[in-house]
Image 1 (cartoon, helix red, strand yellow):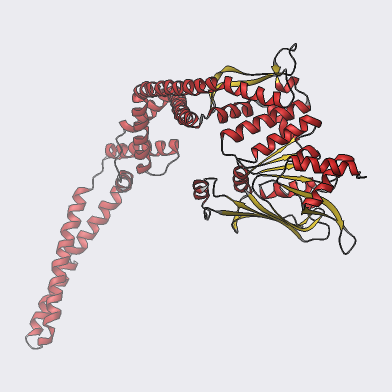
Image 2 (cartoon, helix red, strand yellow; image 1 turned 120 degrees about the vertical axis):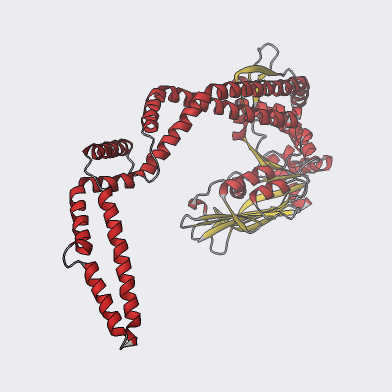
Length: 554
């Protein structure tokens, strides 16, 4: 329920605060007084996009704030989903629009995105204007009306879950079929590539080792010559290193008898001699290992050439990359080999989910069609009450070619206001006044079947007058017993039904600038306002008496 609305620096409004009560309240005022301005300000805190032109001339920013009693709205899960603070009783929505084009939205003083604010606003207030009558042209709106009145929430939830599961499985199957098609197209080439990588039998670290071996094989003669020269210098020439080192060792041992300090040096020379002897033996081993083998060299060159070709072909730089590519191709080929099995299993799963969805759709459709006669009967009764005595109404169901998120049904509201006129889609045959009364009847039915939020009727009485207007007011008053109803009206028959009456009027501020103002009317003031609505600018005694009678009667 809307408890209060505060507006500052919006259009012609300088600053005003309105407090609203439960039940049915009416707002009246002369044409151009600013009733639509107040509604426009309210729309902003419900998530409508802002325009800097709406800011009062000369002001830096405008502020609109609404306080709502949300104790009966069951919004805890929504607030939890949005990660907002929820106290269970009161909620404050605020918009700030700045002259530089910036706009901010708040829920309980926490900044929120505009779309999220709109999501909350849709749960708090239903604004019904003449424009919304066009919703009757929309088959989805008509289907949602049937669902609300048939109370299909549980069935629609079950169907929705089955539909999502089926579509998810269907998409997975479609993706797998597409993958299968692509795999079949490239399977032969993939097998050829994998075979080439598998047959060469690559090993990690192989490339570096092969390059070292090829380098040695390419310089075998130089290596052997160098190793032979090193061996000769160490032991084979007349003055070789080993013999000279042995002489040094003998000399140190002879002198050591007289100079013991040379003991460590002598040991070190002996150690060096042993080390050099080991070096010479290893050199000899390498000398024998290195061979002139043109055939082996050719094998190395061919192996490396094959590796280099594969690296270039696959745009990689290491043997490890080629091995990873080979293994990945192997896995893809395994997937191709097992794809038919997976496709068969997924097709079976998808078919099962399709049947489950169809079963849920059938249950949903059955409940909708079962409720249709009652919906038709009640709406005809309400329209007859609104002086449409010969009206006929029918919910025509048709099966969709392909089920969607709403089920397997499409519904068309058929309507005729006259006995001799065949039923036709309501959007094609109903006049503006008839559309208003049909929508009012539907809204009243929904209000009786579900827990609607606050509803605001913005001159829904257009095209009505006299007794029909009086009965429109009765319906709005009846709705006000179950929910908060605010009616913006220019008809005294409706205005007299309200438990509370607000007047929108223009006044001059201190600087002679015209501003829009609103006030709650006291009983005497209310008589004057309804008399004005009855007689116009010149209020007659008869109009005053008639106003008193209307208010007393209501």
